[in-house]
Image 1 (tube, rainbow, N blue to C red):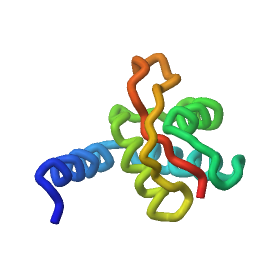
Image 2: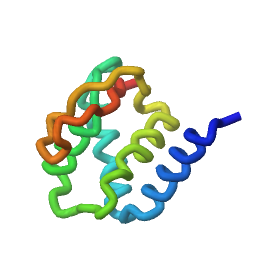
Image 3: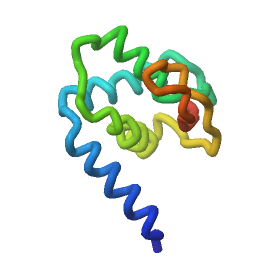
Image 4: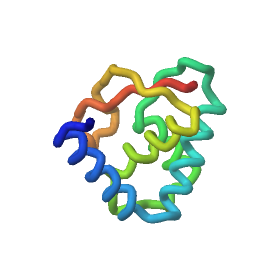
Length: 107
């Protein structure tokens, strides 16, 4: 049974994903796939790398709900594209103020 904190987290992720623009979600999913195609199994990544692909390939597609990155990564993990790790590293994105980001690996 999930704890209250886990239920709150899951609900927040659901809301973030629900309020993100569909066009952005589709583009972000494609960029996750591109990262996976460009790197070998076990390659570590964070949403910073996916954001770089978005900037390069879909610069005009934005969303007001940046917290939707997490649900997109979780969806990619459920598809078997990436694997969640227990590691965190400082973000390289200046807008994130060096906050810790989850490390995933290419499946």
